[in-house]
Length: 210
Picture 1: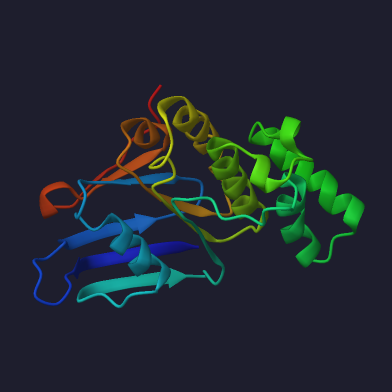
Picture 2 (picture 1 turned 90 degrees about the vertical axis):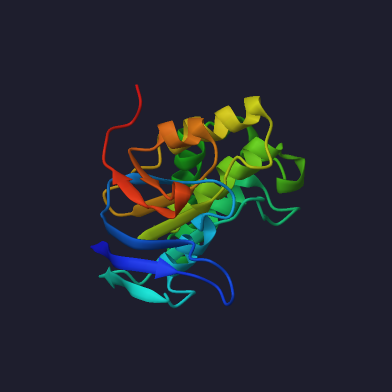
């Protein structure tokens, strides 16, 4: 399973190129931070990786990938459903018995520091709790490609730190994860870094900041 990006470039009509000549190989077990200033094409690149947009030049090839999940900037949950309901649902959808789905869901909530709010309705959660819940639900769905768009953009520093702590626990051998962010702490919570600054993409392999 992998995503191959070759000489990728994109621009919108009558606009300058967002990026060009981007080459990447994305594989499971990594959490890739996608950075760059506003307007550099971070969200556009996520859409290209998902296949929602066709590139103006170059190619995006998804190998053995059929399930794709996207976590948006603002957490979108069902207001009167509990946190546990949200993470148990993907397990139920795969045919797990209710008790087993709830146990697996609770294990995920523990992993993301949400055990204390397992039985609270979504509308009662803080912004950071809601965003961590969306990340947990996305992992519960077991996507092969998980795309996350600016997960801390609407959060204060303390709440953003909670989400960044959760990001350090996202890496999975079954999932390729790409996070678009302007937040240096989010970038440093990831394992690898793709920089779109100045419209000159550069892939900077590395390890998670210590």
